[in-house]
Image 1 (tube, rainbow, N blue to C red):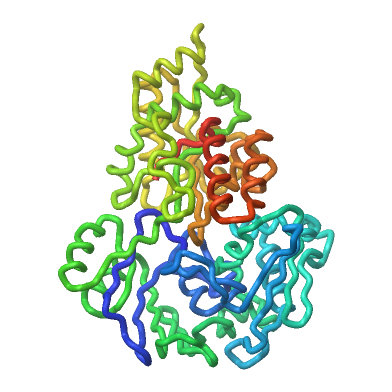
Image 2: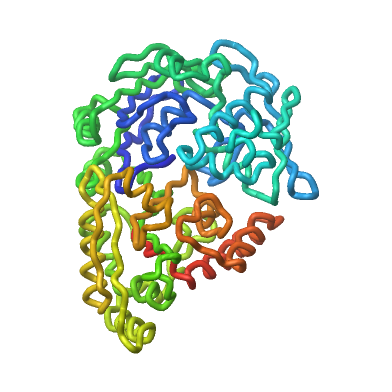
Length: 477
């Protein structure tokens, strides 16, 4: 699941048994359309996952991808042609059969959202995606549906394709429900639970026909914020609820004492400040490295993002290939070393002014982070100015390539190593750093085509090292 920074969930360890109803508190659900699920909201992704199944699912307890609607899958010897076999008994909640055609249409719904769907842009590897995205084709030609078999044809090898389809946004939607009107009322799901009723503040879910779920149902109550949901949990009204960042320590103590637990949902969220290599101010790699050394990353985490961990590289925790010292000395806070790097980069002086670009989040954290970064750069001899933007202005600034040192957040729905490194591929749709490094791109492509998990992990680590050497990101939490 995806979530915002520093949002954890309180959970009563003794869950209701078979036939029971789980009471869950959520926030920011928005639309029930899985294609529109907000990857920045654990609540939104949770509801999508309960109501809709995709081809695969991510089993947190096993740390691996398992089948959902698909009973099996495999890839041809060329590494380019995948086949997913869909359970012939799979149905929507109303009993309508689910075949490959319905899965194909649902994947294309996500692709049609373009950059609005973070996971959708990963579909760019599928043959025909570009033409479909531009409106030159009414379908993605690389998706071929025949009965209960979905064939996926790729432009280049992508060994982790089953991981991609585990994202809740790829939940399969009944064709007749694929409209905003249907999702505003009572959409027919394809997942373990069906929507029995809904109000403005409550979703009543019941076990779907043919579902293997032990629970008889899930009562989902929608709260205005995490504080309200946690208050209801503390009052015994919920079995599970989000915990506000400033209550995590207290919640952990209370949960431990009562036999419950606090489960962090922030491992797949990374946050930092990206560097636009096309900007004259950041074209010098030694200056970029000095910026990373000049900032007290751990201090920012403690002051502004309590309950999170400082990023140790580009690959996040729980993903294969994560290392607790990936960045090593290059990310160690050392003002003297940063000043020396600045002097080496500009021995005759003339250090350019670096603009720190951000948009303010609801919790007013980004402005504090930007100010802390600017102060740190100035202390290391790097002129810096903070630039605040509206969200729309900020997005346009980044897309147009006019940002400099800019707020960067990346959200993964599961701990996929490729998802963390994909933005650093030169030709990738998520490359907002103006990176153009053939060796790094080749390393990422090689990792995607590696035949075994071990070989793939080793290749991704090598790619991470290449990316870190270019210093395109100031990793924070």
